[in-house]
Length: 120
Image 1 (cartoon, rainbow, N blue to C red):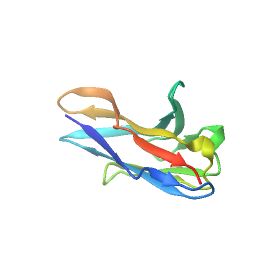
Image 2 (cartoon, rainbow, N blue to C red):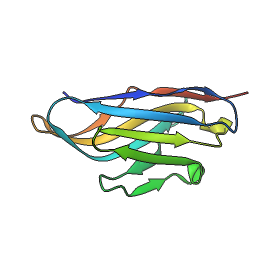
Image 3 (cartoon, rainbow, N blue to C red):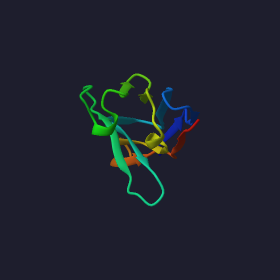
């Protein structure tokens, strides 16, 4: 079984920075695209940023220029560096990955979610 474990959420003041991490663990798997989504109460989960296995990225318009997604393939980890944060960035952030398990085949995997609160 493959798992995604997130870390790095918390409380930050407007204009501040926060870094989320998400590590995949398990046995014998390969990772294709990885991404970060976020969700607030009463709203659908929305894509924040995505990165392919080759390093190509795309971002939601609302975070362009402020957030940076990156990955360390050797550590099976994806990061989200969030700068110049705003109150509207407050949400539960979920990491996502397209993973092929040698045992279970291809699948979509989600992290457990990390609360990010931007408030003074």
